[in-house]
Image (cartoon, rainbow, N blue to C red; front, side, top):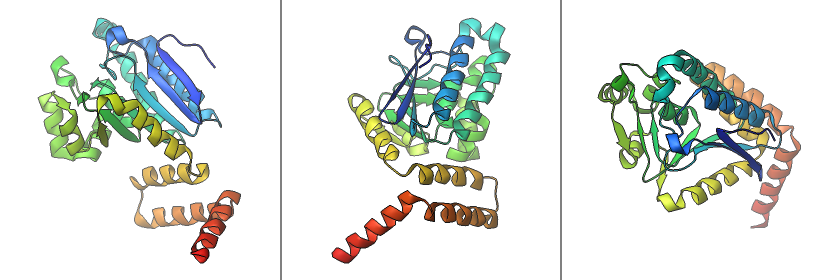
Length: 252
């Protein structure tokens, strides 16, 4: 396993976890953290041992966005890193679960939105705070936000530059599930383990198909479904599960 300073990487039980590790800076993004995050994601997405990826933060924040102490000098590099990270998360064959343990602001908010699913603490919040600095969303926010909440709500969130508390974020669709803070790690692990227990080929094809559908016609998606299903019908795991389900039904 590669050694990092600003991120922690762990693989256990088929689950690879990347933890942003600058708690004294609320896990704010600088060049070094971005570089390590990209390397860690590349490591996990290529690993056959990893069936699910978790992204979370150390301490009381998920990610505060760009480190203001370096933003003036390194801003363009941080924005460019966001493109690579967002594309890596969406191209990852594995499900990617954001475990939002606290505030997720700016680029940190959009790091969470780039993941496939967001489970959050009831103490978490999320916000497109870019206008406070005279900037616009980056790290994919302009793409992810309207697809989750609609264009008019997305514009309100951007123009207001406000941090949205967990309950409202859940209602808007920014968070997919909110749990008590003390239960967050247990519930996140339980969800990741459930996904990791599913047939890996089927899980990965489902992610591919749903994201491809965003830019595809119905006919194209139907053709992709036929291709994927034909491949899976021939797989040993699917044949075993289908036969098992059939035997169980006949025995009732």
